[in-house]
Length: 199
Image 1: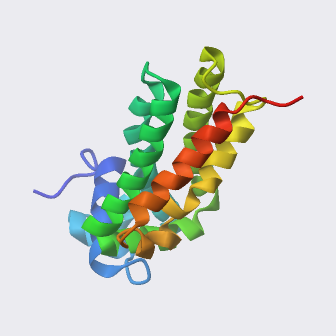
Image 2: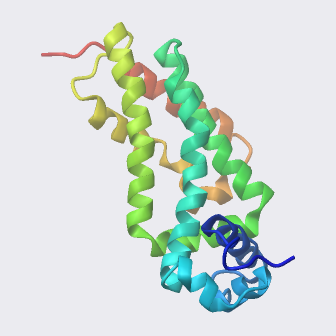
């Protein structure tokens, strides 16, 4: 049964938008297509999202937020910070690789949408680097890491591993040897964070 104006929620609209994007791609998907999939008028969709751009930004944020939520538990674990950092970076790589492999059409769609949503992508990167900052700060407190500025170190770690989580590198993620290359980068970063700070 189609939703009524009382039962139509932003979350239902975003779910339908994701399906429409999967079927039509970002260039052809319209608000009318979303409304049709829900069995409502496009005006009902616009009551929740004032513009097509707002809807696309919201669905992109929803997709990116899933990654942050998936990694939050690892970031907050009470265990050795080196192990936690390794697990977090591996988790990010695995999440992105799984999305690219399991649903390549939608992954490619979100790559396009992310380029349109500068604010959303910036917030996503800030959320991820905040999780990394927490891990590195805990490492400093326990004496495992030795860095003067955990936030700067977190940004450096994030960008040093970008090949393993930025969608533009997705074509490399299934290539033979990529796991070893990932591990080499992570080993180097952990050693760098653990090295004593020279005055």
